Length: 436
Image (cartoon, rainbow, N blue to C red):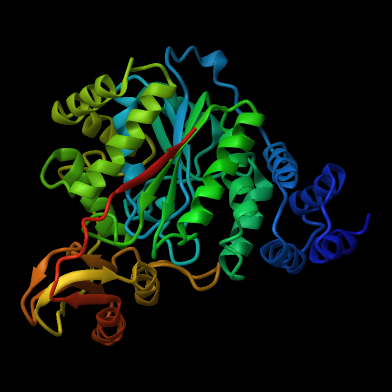
């Protein structure tokens, strides 16, 4: 069948068969389907949606567009587990969670992505560390997982290559927030990684890809169902993205916050709640803990005794990064740092978190086009939390910019994103629900 005919059928709201999906994904993989056709298909899915059966077909086709890993021959001695987030602003959970679970006996081959839309990407963060190889050869990836316990990397050309192309086109064509494509993109990578269990972090709120709770819950249920149908036990947690997660947003700044968290220098409460909840679910899935209390106890020990920090340092060194990342991370710093002043006194009552993410991109910390370079130095630090009281002119955050003009532009945008009021906001929850 002609690719254009497959796109037309989806555009007109028809349900694609497994063979049609297979045909389209073969063309994406071998290059016979162009970026324009991928963009047209993604936009048709945006307007018409994807039935659950189509999501299953797409996930399977994308999974088998490349190699599927088998960890059985390595004799790991523990479960192969992973976590994936639907994307947020300031979300550096993966940097902390992977070594934390590895320190508790799990093996975490975490295949992550770059920034998508207004959200940050784990690979962009790790590239802040000089020398860190985000797309190693598969043999090296497997060796690091076996010897260290975790490796956070990007997709190689061998793993779910169809998703690589779809992901890049979605990022620059306003087709990020298509639930069916999100399901297939995430799960194809995870199934190709040969996991024994997966925990999904499905964000909801102003900074999430799917901001409305109803849409996020539906996505979580589809992820759990499609993964289960494919033989991958999966649990989803709904987590809050109505404010930046942690104190920073921007690649190198988030790496530094993760280092501070792992070393115990500073730990944001909401970030810690998210990390511990997701990590506990991973330990339970992998039968590394008998119950949730036991899981939290093991995780607190791994943090408190410094074992999670040790695993992170070993992973970074094994993948070519700084050999002593906690002592000398070799992170670059922006030449301009200026405060974002509050225009009036009051409690911080709301944050347009999506606008914060877009401001980081405007500073150069993300991409407008797939070919854009990323300035890893820029972003925001010392971001105030909902409910904080500020006097007029007190900083809502610090802006890290490449130039004074960039800082001025970001300041004007960001002052509209933070809202102050006379009353404290209702205490927002970090966790909104669990779906299994």
